[in-house]
Amino acid sequence: MLNVPSQSFPGPSSQQRVASGGRSKVPLKQGRSLMDWIRLTKSGKDLTGLKGRLIEVTEEELKKHNKKDDCWICIRGFVYNVSPYMEYHPGGEDELMRAAGSDGTDLFDQVHRWVNYESMLKECLVGRMAMKPAFPKDYHEEKKVLNGMLPQSQVTDTLAKEGPSSPSYDWFQTDSLVTIVIYTKQKDINLDSVIVDHRDDSFRAETVIKDYSYLVHVALSHEIQEDFSGLFYRKCQLVSKEDVTHDTKLFCLMLPPSTHLEVPVGQHVYLRLPITGTEIVKPYTPVCDSLFSEFKEPVLPNNIYIYFLIKIYPAGFFTPELDQLQIGDYVSVSNPEGNFIISQLQELEDLFLLAAGTGFTPMVKVLNYALTNIPSLRKVKLMFFNKTEDDIIWRSQLEKLAFKDKRFEVEFVLSAPTSEWSGKQGYISPALLSEFLKRRSDTSKVLICLCGPTPFTEQGMKMLHDLNFSKDEIHSFTA
Image (cartoon, rainbow, N blue to C red; front, side, top):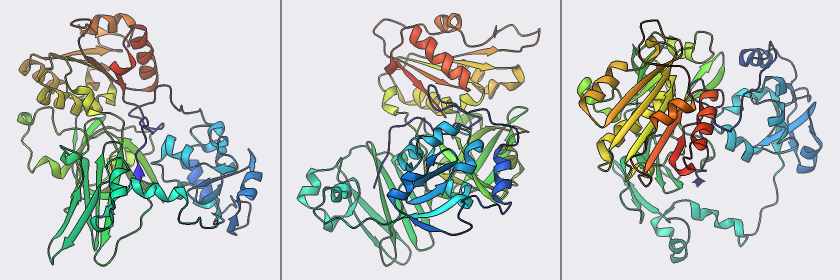
């Protein structure tokens, strides 16, 4: 099945978060925006150079098309002529040229596996890769099945000894109930390690065990084959939308009735919307409905809902469309992704959170989990950077939490305050950090979480290294 890669949060075009030392956006020429690309794909212009024909492409033929003005790339068995897209690609031409004339699936998955390339590049489709001859059954690639899940009756002693956990399953159904039993040696599997979706006559269960994701997909009469390389989406209904600041809103989405999905602490999902006929996808980190449930009693159990704090950019492409949704409309939500490991919080003594703007969102669940579940925790400190007081998300809740729990402290730093502001001012700096990041002792276990726009993240990471914090003591939420 799918071996989940250890990768940074992909989503270079996200307004919410940015990669440190990762892929950067490249300034595009005027008239080369996403909307301009969509207009071009709908213009009827031949973008493949084949006048509407689809062909079968051999490896030899693919290799010939490796120049900027004649660039073919294969993604999951489909070949696209990406030359017309070169000037529209946010990552720049050089990024596309890395896969010129070759299979770019692995590169694509490392950078932006979540992108709906089928929709974005459908007018550039050249054709399929020619099928290779089948390998004999004793070929060593046959062992890939060890990364998957087999029915209990098919698991052999050899399988049980190999593979990361070698789980297996049984399933049965009645007229009103479907039951799947998963057998694994992994102890203490939490509810956020299991995702379940039931649609019509299809039942899908995904289990995350260590670094692997195992998928069971069954129908009433047979098992279903599925492409495991892409993300799975389900349609969630918008049930509420409320203002948090002048430009940030709390969106509440309700999961389908037959879905179980709990997004793990520190992980994100992708929201997908059809915009002008094209599926557009953006990454966001779910939050709690509030920092403490006492502040606002939920109407229904929290595992029915997913909450998002999202800043609306009036000149943006995605968030204005999201903001236009009416209560009762639907948004597609993906499975979770991310490389934050919750064990980083175990036995932690001091937790430092550095957030700028909506970079605060991944801190919400981390903060809540640490204060609730880590008995060794002595102190949690949040330094929250914003432009003005009006931009501070959940200011009153943060101040109430600091009053309620003496382990928690919050400092607000403003870059454009009014004359009445008496708190800290400016941008992230070595002076601010050295004063803020006080270890209790040289041996105390600390973790620093960092999230914000690109300059903030990149500068912050460099400053933390200069202050002699080790790589293991820093986690950057990146996009």
